[in-house]
Image (cartoon, rainbow, N blue to C red; front, side):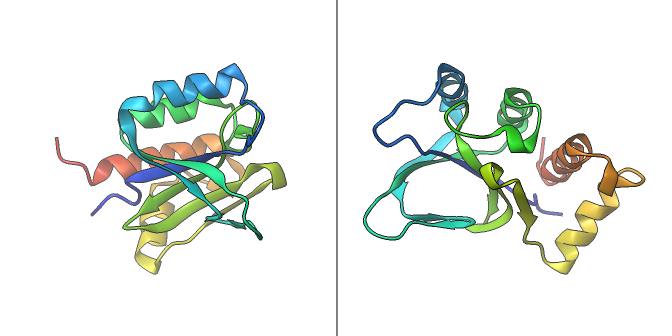
Length: 149
């Protein structure tokens, strides 16, 4: 089975103000995984009207970068600017499979039926009440499953 996600993105929403040191440190730790940095008006779950933009960073998802993601915040909803980059999203083949709008306490999956079955099949027991740890563990198993060693 191919990896569910191979890229993840985050946004620095600070236009004119600076992200906290903790967020800048996370971006530095992820530096070797950077695939693309650009100014965008749209990203998964959001669209800016007018001419304003935000800085988006796309990174390669692997064991090392996933380790940074899972230790930088205690929750998926902890990815809120200015402490950390915001709007964490996982992508495969240019499409979003998982997105968050942490400031709004919103997260979603965009999965095909086969992807859904693969993720649910890796969740332990009553995963709907297990919190972030179960989701992260399932994503870790799903992402690493398709990688060759």
